[in-house]
Length: 373
Ligand SMILES: *Cc1c(COP(=O)(O)O)cnc(C)c1O
Image (cartoon, rainbow, N blue to C red):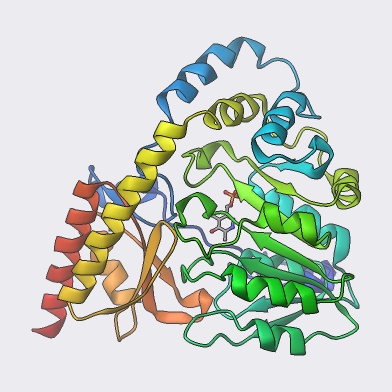
């Protein structure tokens, strides 16, 4: 028997048979090993280009003395802090090892064989992965102009539907749903169907029409909001996120949560990060400027992009994006191919620091130039 025989695959539970693992953005260290180059630019995972807030880093180093102890599994202090900040009781908050962990707890609590989850075309891949892994059916609703179609979503509900995943804004498209769209949608949705509103990029959105999911949650108990410290707060490597839900849902999640799913450094870092309002404003301002710069770059190169409310911009290259992605790698620049999202001609580019955006812009122009000549 060799490792390719499929012997163990046949033993695995049926939900896993046709799954491919999540493919993250290429780590900088990997490209360094492959090319021997240094000074690489990674614009591939929607991380905060400023890094973590400096006060948070200092607090993490002070925490080293406590590392032999288990973390506070109940996360008393951070929940208290989030509770004050968000204006919801701690019983409604569930912490996760990244918001992906929270998404997994929700899926495991409500999805399984005989149930169905609804997602939009081009949605965050973690939703289909979880749904299929748990043996539930996946219903994918077509978008129109990359915009989630909430009417069609309502029409697709069946007696098996248990959960609807909506990222607002969505990754990798950057499109978002307004208050004016989501309120009638929630009004028309049976209360037995849960809506997971993933607000990973909440802090970046600047529009009066953008709904605050936590405000909506007061009116709709079947709404669950997830947020993260991975994006605007600059703590992707620490893995911490949370959900705000009805307390009964939080209690169900707590039954399957790993007892110490959030580590001590993350607990301390997240608590302090919540006070970093200046850091947050600076991050948003750098993002707004970088977004304008990339939009201008793409327009100048005659490329269409999907207008984005997040910290990334997805561009249509009008041809298979992989060769261009590879040539950008050779120039030391990592962006994200999104063929698995059904967008083989697009690349997703995270907004970086001005000099990183600049290097990407120059490199892309060179690569496209070589392609045409
Ligand atoms: C980045 C991202 C997350 C965050 O994941 P973490 O596990 O919190 O790092 C969640 N949802 C979407 C849509 C994302 O793009």
